[in-house]
Amino acid sequence: MDQLSAWFTQLLAGNAIFTANTLGFYWNGLVTTVQLVFLCLLLGIVLAVPLAIGRGSKRWWIKWPIYAYTYVFRGTPLLIQLYLVYYGVVFFNGIQDTIFWEVFKDAFYPALIAFTLNTAAYTTEIFRGAIKNTAKGEIEAARAYGMSKGLMMRRIILPSAFRRALPAYGNEVIFMLHASAVASVVTIMDLTGAAYYVYARFYAPFRPSSSSP
Amino acid sequence: MIDLQGYGPRLLEGAMVTLELALLSLVLAVILGLLTASAKLSRNRAIHAIGTLYTTLIRGVPDLVLMMLLFYGGQIGINMLTDQLYDAFDVDIFINVDAFVAGVITIGLIFGAYMGETFRGAFQSVEEGQMEAARAYGMGPWLAFRRVRFPLMMRHALPGIGNNWMVLLKTTALVSIIGLTDMVRVAAEATKATHEPFLFMLPVAGVYLLIASLSEWGFAKLSKRYSTGFGEASEWTN
Image (cartoon, rainbow over all chains, first blue to last red; front, top):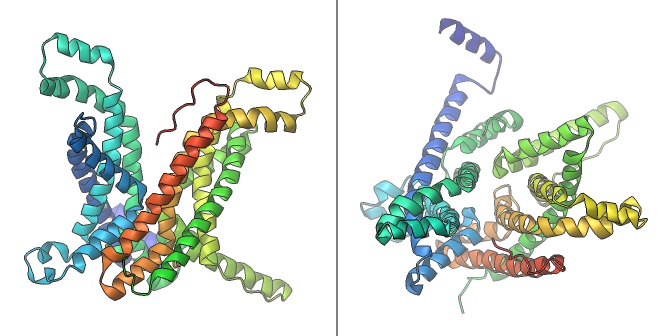
């Protein structure tokens, strides 16, 4: 450990930009990015599974609103959604006096809401595709066993759909990690925000920005 | 009619900037994509390695970070270069990195990598027999590429190109962060000035949706055209 810290101090010696202070910024930025991405993906899945099931419903008043939601959120840039939620909350008249202000005065929660809604829309479509592609034989077998619709969904369709959705969902995770960089625009100190802050102080873009994921 | 409080003309100009930016970057991305696909399919190991390095590197970094690197870093790089020129040859030139040019180059570079992957897969799915037949007809390499390989490849590449275009269109919103006055930036400024986020952001979102819907329709038409002779036109789904 001593050796490691000695090596580290030596590495940082004579370096004006990567001091312990700015590295602390990066660390905090990394923590914020990971928190934001992890939470929005988790909430996104929780929202997407029922929405994906509803998207395949035969009733139009369930099917069409969900389709409209995914179409709008997949058809517009995440940045606009972020602006809408962030400014929509901040400029809401009188919110400063309510109890919600404690939650929303930090940009983290508006950003989390925008990211969650965005990823839930994409994830819904991914899951819906997977559910739709369930082999007919699996459903017939489940019906032959006398399973009810709910049981069939829980035991047969969803597990096999998750397996098929995994590659596309993996892409969505990486996409979200990259997209989370826009959070720095609404004053969140994520990894990109930290890099931009350090850049703005030292005016040397390559070294600070290259360490973003 | 909604009252845009005098921001209407500027929003419209911004929309034009967004559209120009998206189309120019698409052209650059397609050219880069074709080059990358050829590099990745090349038997020359060095060229293959360059293609792989490019696609891996670009696809691993967030768009916004790349954009900041190129815009802020590019200016410093060019300044260093012109300083060297001044010291060595006494030529005094000053090049300013324009936000629009930086935006086109960055978005083109990013989506060139994605297009490269799309084109590579599409080129690989063209049957060798088709090219052999073209050669048997006495077609030269260029004519065979233009008449046989390219149209056949496009059938497989179109869905991928369509998806990339949709993502590219939405990525153009990021240029507002590096200082280009596109419609997102105008809307953001107007929002900060008037405290009316929905009034300005919703029309901008609507324009994006409109462009996306129109291109979805256009790609469906194109896909039908390139699928002539293959039975039912393969459905273009997002």
